[in-house]
Length: 323
Image (cartoon, rainbow, N blue to C red):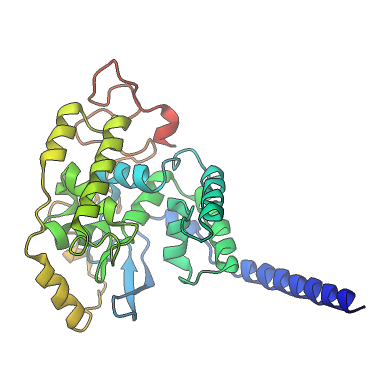
């Protein structure tokens, strides 16, 4: 009798939770407006003191970088490092989920995640940072919807403009200026790999001022993946490996930014946008298509059999380049 009562309670809790999740999903925000490149929205991001601050996503954001001003090496760097199957999956990487579950069971911990780039965009734009099953379900649903409504290029553009790279440093535009004193469009392959290497943990694990050797080692790995993908030629790969990112003297900058009150980003007028070297076309786009995946300025599109590499090597396949 006691066992039956416990079973009924468990079933009741499951039914109530399912109802709660169902109702929550009914109130998820729409994603269709994200397809509009003129769209601006304000989200909440956390500073390094644990406080939330408003952050503008879109052309009115201070450091917003349109897709045409983001180097192809930067786009490919985050893809090979964070979501190798980005151009193959539709928001959820089932294989990665299986691998993560297997790994976590072996380690008896939740050490490995399996979120795709699309899922990370959904989380950063619409959801809280709480670790719960409910939030994960919402993240998956939003990611599926985004894949239906947005191009892969638009998803990468949004992702690279909201990723955390330092103390109140969000987005590749701000990251490029903060660490290297230049616009994102001027980043070298080594600098692209360096920033991508920080993504798993810019606050501690991959903070270049605390763990420079770890960041450098991971950026070397990313450069190797870019070479294998055909994004870099043999000579470009060798030059990138030989380059040392110039981040000397920025520790003081980090310390000061943590010590002083946070400077909240305010929306900028169109007259003040964007930074030098990052000029979009009048309709808010960069004038560079993104339907076929990242390309390199002055170079053939990756995946079209001429990725500036020896003909004997295998070029990225069409499915790697996206729609």
